[in-house]
Length: 116
Length: 115
Image 1: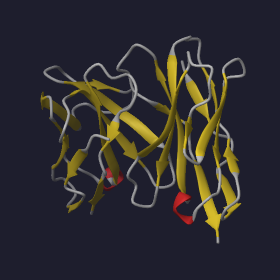
Image 2: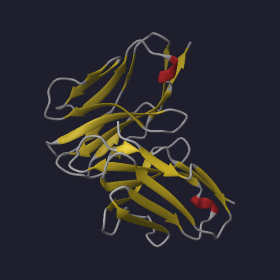
Image 3: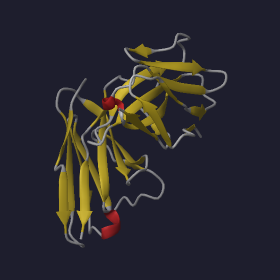
Image 4: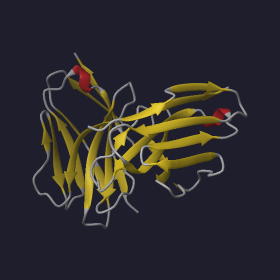
């Protein structure tokens, strides 16, 4: 299957700082990328959907000014957690959907964020 | 709105035995896709099997097979000859057909495999 990478795989930051997470589709073009958040022992919760070259669509309850998403190219999407707080500590997963694919979307390995 | 329900938070199976994980869903759409994803301790999401709603034949992938009951909106996963490496969280998911919309996930079932 196609490969999606995420960087960094884990990050620890101080409260009030901003953290950027990169998501790259390595061998396919992802017209749509999804960002999920997963708390321990819970399912994946969709945060936002981003389409290349346009603004992201955020799910209800997700602050768009806090979780900035940029999808500037068909192979790169970034999630920036601004002014991070301990409650933002979580596991963040991105996923890319290839052009014209309605079947399989490919997941990154996730990024563990810990805010002190 | 579409929903996906997994009623078994945890399941356990003996190595080499067979186990079935349940999933039901609710939708008014006629065109959609159903998936089972595996999330091992590494937390990398791995596609196990997928089913197109328009196909009557149940999907199979080696030791993994599904029982797709469209009228009952049921989509169970059967794992045969269970192996220790099958231990993981399993998520059932739905996507509306003809779209690049997001996957809707169930809450997951944690599968343990006993040696």
